[in-house]
Amino acid sequence: MGYPEICQIISQHHGLKETKLDEAAIVFLADKLIEETQRVSIEKRFADNLYKCKSPEALQSHKLQLKQALTLQDMIQSICHTTL
View: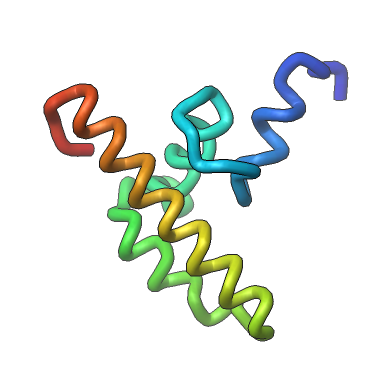
């Protein structure tokens, strides 16, 4: 779509290759803190979407993404000395 510089970042908003604090992680976490147009907790966002997991692989991915989101949230809160 004409944005080759950011395609790697955007491509990871549904799942990070690794849990490290970088641009992709910020986009990933921001995606997890919004549900439609509302700010939600990570726990609520993942609980609301659990029904979509129709296979063991999907459930495993869901759990991994939840763990990644919570880890990143903790990392940012620690750095900023605040809560998200």
